[in-house]
Image (cartoon, rainbow, N blue to C red; front, side, top):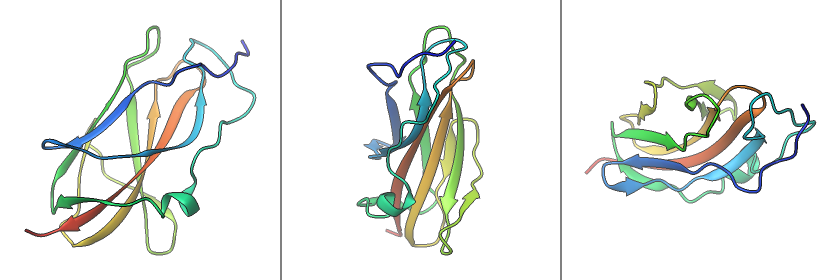
Length: 135
């Protein structure tokens, strides 16, 4: 069943301790409907734009948690994460259900998060950037 993009998108919060991490939306193929199909992808930021995001400072080895809204009739959101490496290639990043652990080494890290609600075209990707500091 071909449908249009919804008027609103599910909310996403990326957090660590008492701090929310800002994000920007990447590509989306989200209908919000069971078995809904979109003929194309709604394009947001790609890595060339996402690299310009101002990073959020976090402490080394901090755990970041993902919390996307549940969408009526769809599956619970599943999360998939990649890290943009120094060669500008996305490499899979270890995730524990709905959280990741930030590296120990100081520096800036750009992440690509895909949230999938299943049951048709229901994925949205996000970019966020952190700067690991030791304090």
